[in-house]
Structures are given as C-alpha cells and as structure tokens.
Length: 145
Image (cartoon, rainbow, N blue to C red; front, side, top):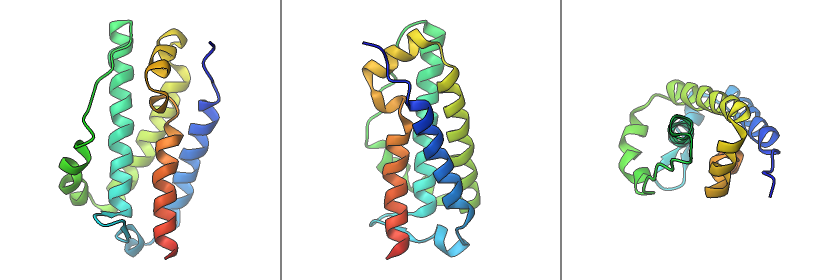
C-alpha cells in the first residue's frame, strides 16, 4: 500500500496555523490557561518537544537504515510540565515554530522507503498536523472563553 503523501500539505498548513496564531498573541494570552495545568506557552513547548521526538526517530531510522522507533512513555508530559512552565512565552513560541518548520522540511525530504516504515508504525509521526491541530484547537478554544 502506497503511503499517503498528503502529510506534506497537512503539516505545512498546521505550521502556518501555528505561525498565524502566535503572531497575534499578547504576553497575557501566552499565559492564558488551557485546561487545568497548561497555558498557551506550555502547549507550545509541548508541541516543540514532541516534534523534536519525531526528529529523533527520523535521525535514528536514517542512521540505522531501518525503522528505529524510540518509545517514550506518555508520562513524559507530566514529568516535563514544570520544565515547560519555566520556558518563557517567546522562547516556547520560537521552539514550537522553528521545530515545526524544521520537521516539516525533514519529513518532506526524508528517504521514502524509511519514511514508509515510520508511517506504517505510527502515522502520527509523519502527519504531525494531527498532533499540532489537536493542541491548536484547544488553545483557540481556551482563548475564546
């Protein structure tokens, strides 16, 4: 089965959405609550972290010449929360945007046969828009309350 390459446009669109959102936020809005424990800035740091995680999967897979799934427990979110909260909103924004842009480019240019192995293992690692859009929806919803 051929891999769905629409991830390129989906990822690009979610990165553009991210850029558009952060470009209009005030300092106060970056500190706005998104759920019980998160702020907008924490959501951005979270996105940067998980995009970096996929970058590690790509690096290791390319180096090994085969799928190298780096497993990370979801508890990492809870463990990382104090660290993400310590990141300033401008830095969280920079990390989220730059990491998303770098990962989009890397995924687009990644060797097809290796990317297909990653896609077949975990579609979310290729369609980063699924994760980004989930949290951008949460942020936008929280900001309209």
